[in-house]
Image (tube, one colour):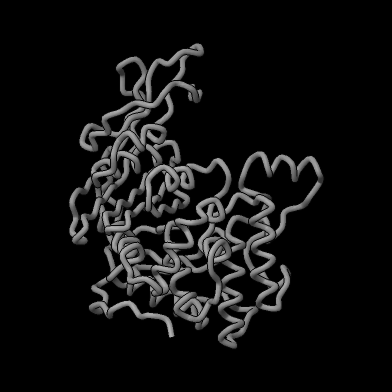
Length: 347
């Protein structure tokens, strides 16, 4: 039997469904003038799980999108998913559609005695622009395997197969698999789900607070060795490109900060957690990825990470006429102390 995580108190009430009271989290500055403002919310947890820093609205209900995939994968491990290493990392992936991702998803299906036809995610072209362009040049059509959530869906099917559950309806919120996922979301976040929707890939999506998402991630990284949570954390940290792709900022962040677990999600969501439980969670209200990375890096500095490890994630310079004229920088409240080197154009 696998080691069990100590029981936690019953989840508290669901977070309120309201218009989030976001605050400014990043400024786009051109020659000293604030040209644009990104709003959002940020929470930093200390090693004791208490809130060490917050900005904006960390308690309103929000959809964590793919940032919750490690939690979904923990639910599958608890239900008997037998994957390890790179294939387990792929189970929590928003992958780029590289060949290793397609090969891995096929392998997970093969282990379950299934083929790509069993997948119920939305067909798509690969997420990575270069890989997508290659597919288009070669005339390859969208496929369920190439869609960035295929690893998660293959793992869901494998979990259902291990338990003898029905396969065709594995995405139904009433299916035993999705009930197990919902229970794990509530267990790890410590709060009841506020709303159930459908993610872009077709899987059920559970609304929790940003604070709850941070708590869940902290519990995953601090779990005892051998537990489902620890197995998930180990797989992601050892194989970050399997959960994302070559050149992806989330994989680069995990490589840059020793022991860090990080996961991004659509609509500007990001979580990142250190092995001792220090955790940050970020939501950019307009969904902009250009703000997500710098704000996450600034929050990690707030959590005590050496700023020298995070310079590459501080934000690209703003160019005008080919020369740097400004930058996107987290607001002063986040106190990010360094600037990136010029290079990326954002005009």
